[in-house]
Image 1 (cartoon, rainbow, N blue to C red):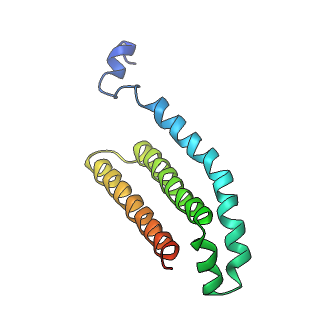
Image 2 (cartoon, helix red, strand yellow):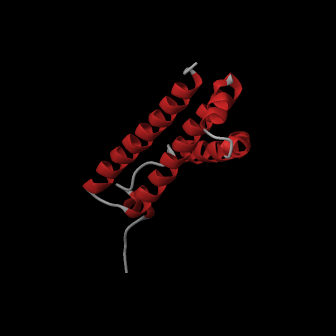
Length: 125
């Protein structure tokens, strides 16, 4: 049986100031992924069987290149937020910070790689 007050039990468990912003960021990216995913996948699926030149022609158009870039950025940001929630819930100690930094670097690296690939196709004239 514990004789601690509610405040004493909660002391040192962190503040509750950032959770709402993180919650809304994750929900907004999830909602944004629905139309962006459809606008990215359907044109890509149509040109998929036509070969390399058809895909280059498709993403040479600014509209499709911009949609692909937005999809990549939003998808990797959503992935980063989701992995961050899991790590914060289940990993404790010094490993938490290391994993969160690696998570951010991993998502940024792959997002920049995707953007570079789309830009290379779009500007390959």
